[in-house]
Image (tube, rainbow, N blue to C red; front, side):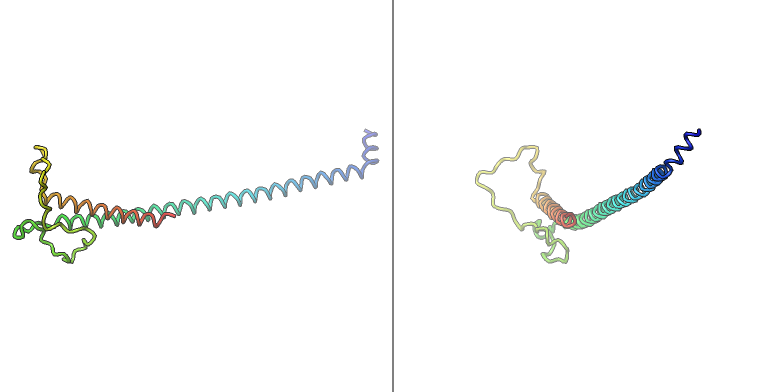
Length: 165
């Protein structure tokens, strides 16, 4: 034990220097770890904030798309009902009894024609099962309904493409 005390007393400056260096190393490691942890936490918060913004944007776009789809659907239902309410006037020979500017909001849908084109010289025969089932009035209604559908789909697409970057 005597030799240990002599060694410590003889090299006390070296031992003290080593102890000071060891303490500096521990303090440096502690400070470095806390800085790395702070940077890590800041990066995590930044990513979480970006993710929250992205989710909010997606929710806003979905809500906007749903609102546009609902408005288009309601407008289509309203116009479709208005189109279905047009009854043929028997006094005018099957022509729809709706004035051209009758105050209805159907300007985007073409009006039914007053007459039909003259028959061809070589008409195509209709299959017997379809004969008499489809009248000119039904074809006119179907064409107007299809036109209305197309107009509403085009409007829906235009409004959807505006909100998406």
